[in-house]
Length: 132
Length: 136
Image (tube, rainbow over the protein chains, first blue to last red):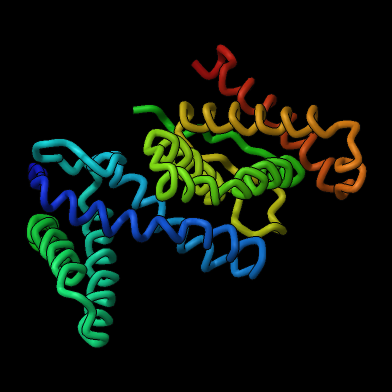
């Protein structure tokens, strides 16, 4: 079966980019886990997540401004699906916290946009999974 | 598509490469500075790719400092492995040259210094094998 092309709109790209960038703030935790805490499995698991982030950024661009048009996602769809599910879950956790703590509306809107962008990608990747 | 390299290294060579990767991971805070403080996205991208290479090598040689296997097969695609080995070799050479006669080096654990040397030699050896005509 031919693999469908998945493209993000500028707004979807921005929403996912912000989530990835927020996640990447914790990159140094890999070193901390490995060197200071000696938690090798946790360091390895976290590193795999960051490797996925880096791979996605190859597609959507590293610069915060991004491109003016759509961006095509070229990651293998199995990996892309897993990544979108992780970002969605992490974002959902942040959203739940924000609602519970009655944070300002603006950040919540950004979190909703991220979850929706992930859902939009998962529509494609999950459909392929079912068809296979 | 470039094939996997399939080069086998022994435990001592592995320990040398592990030391070099560990040394590079020590600069991981620079990534955050580039991404969030100076907003040097080109630098963040370069560093991100380097750390991704480090993580990929650690999949082959194991993340634990001590690993009981006698041999390790490097499964990275040849171009990526070559690039990684050249970088690690150059970083090792810089450390060995810069601190060769300094007090810091004398204080540094002798075993760590030995692993740096072996790591440097392993990079030379494996990248040399990758470039040998028989592999082409």
